[in-house]
Image (tube, rainbow, N blue to C red; front, top):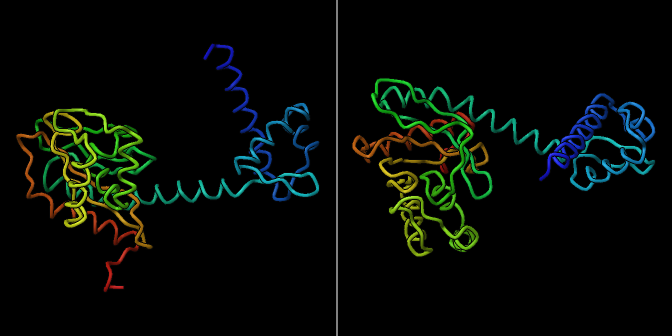
Length: 258
């Protein structure tokens, strides 16, 4: 993209935000003439941008030729709220687990074919730490929590992920075949816990467990990471217990306890 094209794209985004802000300030639908006047846009430019926003669900067009905020914003807002709630509820449990084991504890969310790290606790007594940078992303098949999400789906969906991504190798230990991945996911479904055995980064291992909301939906993953020389697979029950405690804080109750 050229510098000119980049500036043009930024300008369009800025105009979109101005339109959204005007609509947000008016409880009733606003017509095109008012929107153009209040944003300083030419009516044709405002109309063109609004059409795209309508297509994306960010804005809804009324029969009288006026506009209001679209339901897509409600959907996105609820999603953001849910994710922020997860971070708030999870952090005390993450800190407790970190203090107990002295290793890096991560909270991550699925975004498409990747896990995104949204919180971590990494300070403490350990001289050498594994730190997952907040906002960092990693493919599902190389992370413990990514495997939790893949295991939640069917084998056919897991195959679709494998074909879509090609299962790229990050270390010699990465699972790079459909067969190996499906075999691993079968183990995850039985134990509800997953391991990253130096698959994302050589010399680093990880244990992951899922976090569920009040409806039982898998919404996040909790994991603990450590250098291979300090890693202990016997941490798995504590990771699972902590993930379940966070789920309970979000309103989840195991089947039979509701």
